[in-house]
Image 1 (cartoon, helix red, strand yellow):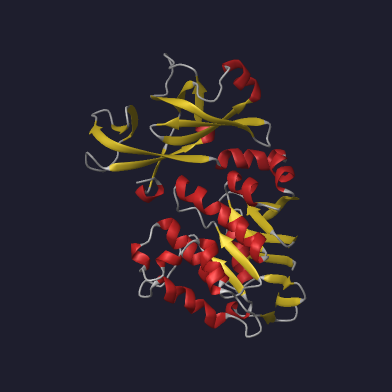
Image 2 (cartoon, rainbow, N blue to C red):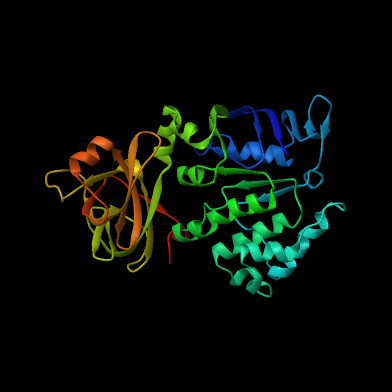
Length: 360
């Protein structure tokens, strides 16, 4: 089943102009925030009304502005998985799943028990959404989308709100479901890791236009896409606020590591989540004197892997959490680092994130 898309939309500060085909399997829309990924899938789902162009799914026309054809979202037989689970809070898990059946076409069958088994949610049936973890909620949301027996699944950064452990837990489900159920999927992400793990086909977007498309490793090796990918690699570190200083800095602690950030409006003892961008990290074998960066933390090399840009992705364990950075292969050779070696991450800048972005 092939999805064919040609869409144009003009807005005050943004315009979209994309034409592509998404074959069976998992097609990933990749790009930074504001590149047009969500606008594209919302138009495919029928959630936008001021577009021009044409969208077909196999031989079925979902949208054609020239013919004034615009099927309503419920008529398109598309399952949509959002960033947030959007489960009905007043219904149990089982009732949320059964709700999807009313949107199923009469001529299509779906095996409730098989999907429940695939997603590992049988034990959750009688529970309320409020009692579930983030990963459990997303598995139920995936199940609800599948139980409508869709011709296509749209997934809009479905793992963005989850911590690293929950992401690692859920990622294999998407590939497993696609392989076992054969439902094509259009998956939105700005995570290079998710692209390389999931994608059969990648469409890279920038400012509402397609940069390149094709097999995952070919697309991610494109120099322009690789720069975007490197900017998109982010990690989180859970810390605790331990002091405020008169020079306008707040002191944080992660295990035995101390970090300083611009003053935070929070009380001592508050949990603070830091977002670390790979491009803002320097890797060293020892702590360095005579530099402006205040934050130098000890770590251990967890893994080393080549990435399509030609650089090397180094995952470093700091205070029990994995922080990703990238360096050139020449720098790696110069540092002579191997898995298990002690190292130091020099942090040029950090972003303060909502606490639910970090573990615990």
